[in-house]
Amino acid sequence: MDKGRQGRARAAVHGSINWPGTLLNGRPRQRDDLLWHLRSRSPHELWLVIVDASASTRRHQALSDAKGLLAQLFDDAYRQRARLALLTASGRAPNWQVQGLKASKDLRDWLDGLGAGGGTPLLAALAEAGRWLLSRQKRYPAEQQRVLLLTDGRLKSLTPLARLGCPTLLVDIERGPIRLGRARELAQQLNAQYQHIDDPSQPLLP
Image (cartoon, rainbow, N blue to C red; front, side):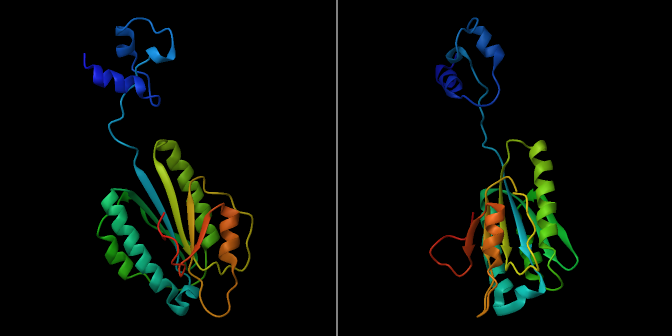
């Protein structure tokens, strides 16, 4: 028997018990007698990106600079083999662009064509994202999920919001001499990390 492999199996304390391997060594009398199935691969990562592309994000090149951030994010996801979900909030209702697919270079074409316009169905997008994440967590319980939300926070009102159940970063893209500052309040409601896109002191990617 490969003692090195057995030692690693004993050291693993997560996952399912390898009962055949355990019982071959006799009846287990304590936890250290258990062997565990080795996990050869780490859980997949899912990055859910929510983009506020309402008309207000055209101001002061907010969406234009946000697209530069997204391009960097897509490249990182491609290199890290992460799965991407992409939800845009503009017009009358949010729209899914990608749902849990492997990141690909084709997203650059979509990004080039992304424009701002219409209303701000951001609250509907957050509700939709919460439902989708919950459903996906049930299907893939080992998946590591993260959310990146880009918005200027220019909403008519903020209603109580449910948290998304995974690490969330809100990037505030509001600019101009007069700012409502609602993106920070939105981040607090979501229990999300807050950062402004013009803040150079911290990395802007989750």
